[in-house]
Length: 258
Ligand code: SF4
Ligand code: SF4
Image (cartoon, rainbow, N blue to C red; front, side):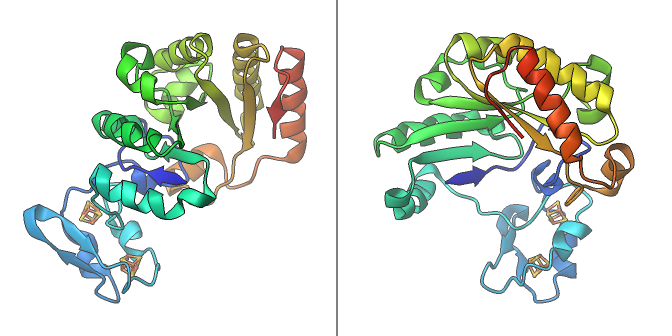
């Protein structure tokens, strides 16, 4: 079961769900544009989304000037636990994603503690912007982290994500040593073969077959206009993915998925 949280300290240009980048600030602009009145202003500047009325046209998301979405549910860990219990017989565990789920660290510790009592696993999908090495409480209830490594080159990482990359690589090394690295992922871009190669080489040298490496072919779907200008309107080719897979294998990865 995948659970998506809103807000992220990165602002990746290729983000395919950019409406999760910021928390809703309750400006109300989207409320006026909904064609079926599925949105209303509730108390404390919180937009209320009527899921039953919603026709999923995404007009609200296109209207939002804040990289956010009103199609969210405010939940306590107990509310979420009730949803998880409904699916319990079909799943092995939960994965929390985003946005960047570690923005809600206290919520995760509380949620994972309760979910583990159901004998389900708890995985984190992260962009590496949170210093896992400093949080033994979270690590104790987390079974593993799926870590995105966007770029090895510091300047390219900054251009792509608007954030620095040092902590991502610190997390890569720490999680590997701690036996908590479930998987590493890199999105490979169609128009930056040199940057792709640099990242794949650096990650593969570090993980040395101790963890699965997934190379995700970039797709332009959901990417905002600014991102399309930087990243491309076309999908990364199978040939480029295969070329990078061979490089990853040569550099020491032994489980590469494209
Ligand atoms: S996606 Fe749903 S809530 Fe958003 S504008 Fe369309 S109908 Fe309204
Ligand atoms: S989703 Fe965006 S437009 Fe709608 S209230 Fe929140 S910040 Fe404003």
